[in-house]
Each structure stands twice: as C-alpha cells, then as structure tokens.
Length: 262
Image (tube, rainbow, N blue to C red; front, side, top):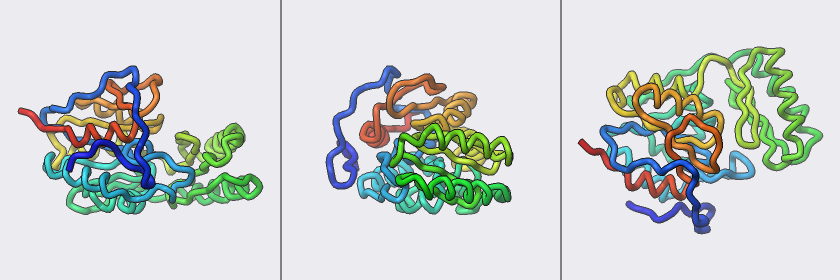
C-alpha cells in the first residue's frame, strides 16, 4: 500500500520542506532499517498517550518488513509494549527504553535489570511535577521520564534536577525533545542496533537508522561504522546522519518507496 502522506489524528499532514541534507536513496543493497518512533514514524504529541495507532503507518511497516524479509526494527525510547501499541505489533524486532529491552525477530526478549536508583528518580520527578501543571512523569521501571512539552518554561529547572540526580545516582541522563530521562546505565540505541546486526535476519545487511533527536545519534554512528548510514528526520542541526527527511510524512513516503537492489 503506497501513501502520499501520513494522516495524524484524522487531519492531513502539512506539506514538508527539504532539510539541508540530501534525501536518502530508495534503492539500497540488502538494507536493514532501524526506525525511531516519536518524530519519525509518529508525529510528536503533547503527552505520550496521545500518540495512537494509524492504519496507514501499520500497513506501511508490514509491507516494508515483507519486502525486506523481516529486516526492520523499531528502536525507541518507549517501552516495547508502547511500541507494539502504536505500531500494532507490525514490527517483530523492537528495542525499547534506549536499548534496555530488546525483542529479537524470533520473539525472544532481553531486558536489563533496573537500577534501584530509578525509584529515587521517579519519586523526585513526581515531587517536581506536583507543583508544575503540564509536567508529566513517565515510569518505565528501568528509567524515569520527565515530560515538559505542556510546560516548556520549566525546561531549565527540569534539566537542572535531572543533572543533579544523575550526578548523585549514576543514572544515565538522556535529553530528548522537551523530555529528560534518567535510565539504568549500559545501553543506547547504538548498542541495540549493533546487537540486532549480529543476528538473523539482519546479519550481513546494510544498516540504515532513522531518528530525529539527540538520543538517535548513537544509532547514526553505529550504522555508519557498519557500512550504512543515518537519516535525520526534522529540522537541520549538527548530526552524524548522512541524509535527511523533513518530517513524518516524508518518512512514510520514503519507506513505501524503499526497494532492495542487487
């Protein structure tokens, strides 16, 4: 199923404009695609729960996995349960919470044990949010997220709190798009990509990572090191990605056009 653009919340997506990076080619030798969720496959929303399944997205992912013989994985800061909710389980391979949980193509799971300090971070974030309307705490068990998209004026205070907690607890600080997260250390989107590339059906393929924010840079670098490349989605900035796409609508068009070549 080919689509002209992704329709978000029942309304047509706006026309996109090109970034300073060239668009990625659509004909690739044995590609393996690694896709972020928010800002790449799905439009950003005020709250995590506001991102919902969409039939055109789901159809595009299923068709892509079929064309590429399963060499598609969603790598996200969300949990695998959330990835499956939004993508309607269209991707057999998935990695959640920046690599802390990973599901292989055969359905087997790897999960890193949560640092006890995550509970301290959740408590501190909840105390912070209680007096700041619009700030949302997300408890992912292995990490704690503090979303301030609904209260952007709280950005400096949120980041200062997260930095202080990271220094005190040893949790890894992940800053994203109007969100800051403290996670159990040891993984990233890059480590998840590397792990997938050691296993079927990805082994021996050319990795391509699509992402939109700073947490995706590890994935871009990992793909490049293995002979592939990164694709930055959204506004131009300094990046390890080699190509660019302007937004979610352009991503879905590109995914529908990707073909494997000899």
